[in-house]
Image (cartoon, rainbow, N blue to C red):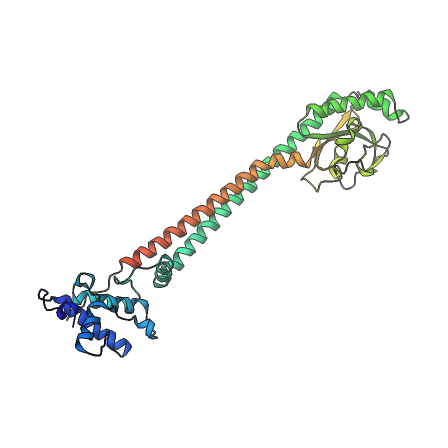
Length: 364
């Protein structure tokens, strides 16, 4: 008996009273007990009118929250809060059996997403596969473009370093080089003048850390000899590449006459004959040098008497590539953001489909 039937002064009950009776029958079927009981008829009617039924889950009955919500909605005191028809109750029951959302309860977002994804596993798998494919394609395209751009930038840097070395070699008086090479090394006026010229070229050239001249003592001998270096004019602070407050032995400027093994730098030996540069940047040495360009110093008889080397610091190389790397990272971040957006749209679509899924109406 529904609450409105228990009241003697109420209007005639309608179909929603039958919905209440169906809910009470469902409650008994789930729990093995009626929704209400009392010591007397008046006690029982009072509970029907004013006391809410104990949820089946509180009684230890293991049923789905959907089924419990359907049962409790059918047992609402106010007829307007129940199902409008028995068919609506039956439809919610059928939907609960196949995992579709029911009208009897509101779903938390996490539960709604989880149930929608479980209901559309095939579509979810296809969507995730498409998103992964999209991200992989974008990453491959960005990586390929970045590699191409890095190669082009490296070629441009290499050409600029070669041009700088060639221009510097043309600005050096070959007779002055011969004079310095023929004299005793030390505080020789010609050596100082030549070092000043190199330092001037270094200061007006972008990114150049050192410029120095070496000559070959013997043909086909990879051991070269320093003629002069622009590092002679660097202060102790500039020479302190380790920033430890002092100039270490391996940081001091090369002195005229010091030997240098060019074996690890084949492009330097080639530079005795024609302009060139390192093929690729190498690990920065103690001077923080990672890339160099070379050009021969030609005398009046068109003979190469020495090689001029231009060193580009690793910091300058980093600055060259910094904007390219930044663009690469930004593009990847945009790609990931697009992938995340695609996943959000996929989940939203699946949730929308799950909420709109219609169970076929009951027919006799």
